[in-house]
Image 1 (cartoon, helix red, strand yellow):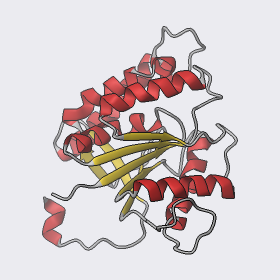
Image 2 (tube, one colour; image 1 turned 135 degrees about the vertical axis):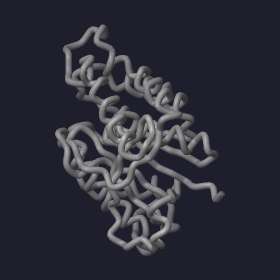
Image 3 (cartoon, one colour; image 1 turned 90 degrees about the vertical axis):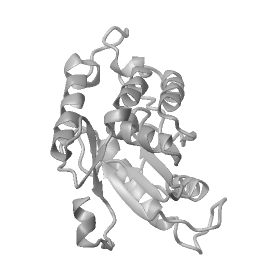
Image 4 (cartoon, one colour; image 1 turned 180 degrees about the vertical axis):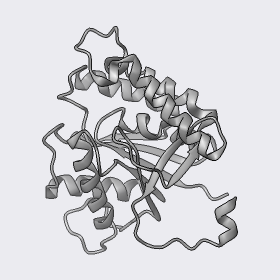
Length: 237
């Protein structure tokens, strides 16, 4: 089996754990190289400080078996598709050379997630331009497959990945983010810190798992517009 490089991008620490933590843990345990790139440290979040979020992200990465995690320290809330931001993301793509990129959802409750989708999608294309100037890493690279994960706003998944065996690792990674999810943390309540949010997360994974005959699943949608070469028998395996 070919060893793959899988990079999950998020706007804030905890985004990828919530949406695809089980998938990352699964493929890390299978021997693939798995990385996380956070655009910001969540500096302006209602709960917790940037320093706490970075420490919690390190803990979460260890729970998921992440080989490397990079925080680009773009400004939370205010990051845009600037030349500087694009080049930071492009350099990171060329450094990690993902075969598969997992990126935020284009339709989302949080505007940072929608802007992150646009920024990262554009950077993934720019990373393949050989003559692009102003980069530390000059060798071009584009992933073979880009998927967006599903966050707060419901999107019907095109791909479901069985994470039954690594759901426990996902939950362990989320427990690292005490500032975000622990109701006892001394900060105002948010939608993420309610008991119902974790119930919703598990119920959705259980529903998706039901569709493919497993206990838990995580959902994705293809971002690539290039048609896949698939034989009909492959669709029923």
